[in-house]
Amino acid sequence: MKQDLNSKSIDKNFKLMIISALVLVILFIYTIYKSKTVIEGTTYYLGIGFLFVLLILAFVLKLKQEKIRKLINKDGINSFDTELAKSSSKVSKNELDSTILPVKSNISFKDVAGIKEIKEELEEIVEFLNNPSIFQKFNVKLPKGVLLVGPPGVGKTLIARAVAGEAQVPFFYQSGASFVHIYVGMGAKKVRELFNSAKLNAPSIVFIDEIDAIGKARSGKSNDERESTLNELLTQMDGFEGDSGVIVIAATNKIEVLDDALLRAGRFDRRLYVGLPNIEDRKKILELYLKDKNHNINIEKLAITTAGFNSASLSTLVNEALLYMIKNRKSTLDESDMEVAKNKLEFGKKQHKILDMEQKEILAIYQSCKAYISKVKVNLLDDSVSKINKVFLSYNEMLENIKRELAGNVGLELIKKEKFAIGEDAIKRAENIALEMVEKYKMATSVDEIIFSVKESLKLEFSQNIEEINRLKELMLKNEVINKDDL
Ligand code: ADP
Image (cartoon, rainbow, N blue to C red; front, side):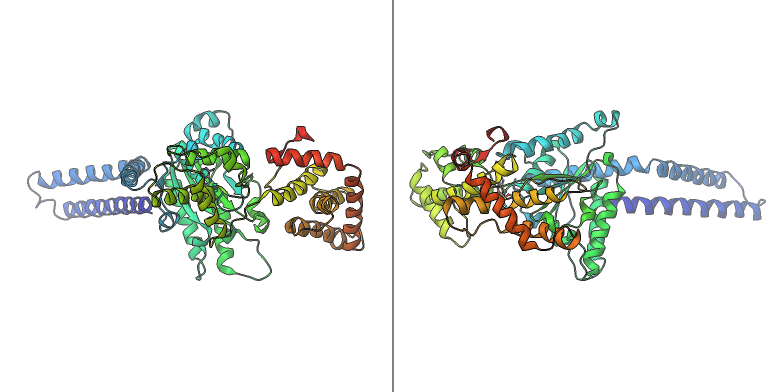
């Protein structure tokens, strides 16, 4: 917005200069014409000359205004950066939220532990921002938008800030909710302001957290304000070229509620799934947080017993343990501090789903059955299911997709001889596919019949391969992941 104001005032001043110069020239010519005989000396001619110089200057400035604007903006950011550098290294979301101003990110990939695959994917964007000419030479366009999908506290914001930090470009943080207003047009105006500011500061990163607040699918019920905000976002994303240097990163927990238009080519066409940290990730995160601390914690063991923690709660865990250590006037962090912190988190106000060995085994069986049927890599803490994805699915392919969704529940019931309250989303998705088969495509007559027959075939398949499922379960318990090669 600061830059916006700058550019607006430049424009206004140039226009005023040109108009006043023109008016004065006309006035002088008119005076000379009217009173040729009265004019004596050279002052009048000097005056005219001066005005012509002014006029030419105004034109030159007008032509070069882009360059001047960039110069002013650069200064603006630099002074802003130093201000920020002075402030604390971690800027809270609320602070970032308050205005549409960029911040300088001092986070780098080093500060993001684990999630190696996500980092690798995003490195390409850093490369582009650092070295756009290579990409432009080969006429390669980068995606304009990257959508990070995953539960809260797994580092989506952190990684976006790390991209900005690595590329040393301004970072614009906005939460989706901050665009939601009561008055029609306000949200759209804010979207426009955000993109204007980002373009003026390009190359830059725009990060929209919880984009579902604006990007929810347009339902039957009309909500003019949200629709106008969403439309503006779509227009803005269409309005800049891939090589403009503005990269939009958005985060959501619920991709399924997003409007299809947002996911279409040329918008958020790259999607990255960030799941709960697996055992290796947890080890790396704990190592990072305990790096410069005096401790005798067995990180390996702690990583095993914190299955179900997200990255943010691991950081809270270490912090709580340190607080307890200080309270007890100790100088080394030990297992007892960790135990107290863990109990506090477990029974505290925030409900953390911590998995003990019994619960972990249930989840491991569920996920192993899923991996066995889908034949793809599955993480212990991953709730997505890999499905056949084609434009025109056949009847059998739709049945196969239902099978993949229900594999966990059916396998678990068969092995443990009991039903468990697990996988509700997968069950819902399976029912939705069956419903589509019945109502949309008239492939079958009853949802219940489809689900029943899929379950029967799963039961048969699992009962003939119990040993294999058990092998996979042991692998899952050990590594918290089953890779394609293990299958
Ligand atoms: P999300 O955007 O997914 O909700 P955040 O990026 O806001 O999660 O993460 C919250 C906090 O958790 C971060 O500020 C950071 O302290 C910690 N954190 C999350 N992921 C990681 C990670 N991979 N490595 C180190 N710390 C992390």
